[in-house]
Image (cartoon, rainbow, N blue to C red; front, side, top):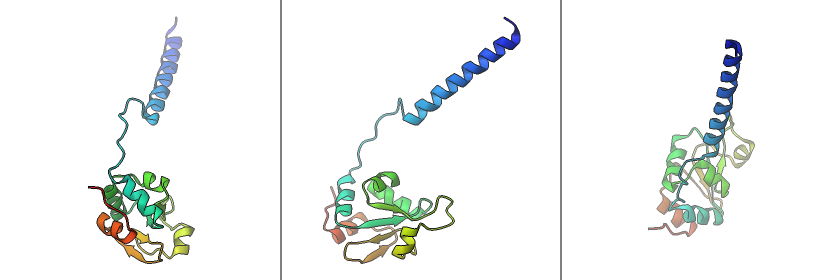
Length: 135
């Protein structure tokens, strides 16, 4: 076999291995499953009370709120508690947040129409929504 054929076969092999590795990494193969957050039931209760957390992916205070719940923004969004207000380029605001009059992040809007802004402690959110913070 000449050198050009060997090089070609080597390149194809590397591409196949790279593709397999990328698929495995993206699917999370080999990683341990994450445990549900201790506060997942609290998050669900707050959502069920009619409250919504409006934030932006780039907002450090929103990230602190997510960390308090022990949940990702995507997990909070999946249960319907979190609404993203930032456009993907971080230079604008989504129409839903414009319509709600969201001016700062995080903003919590409750069923009664009241609002709280900033990082709100879980016990305060629980009290406002009639939920219980797990011990």
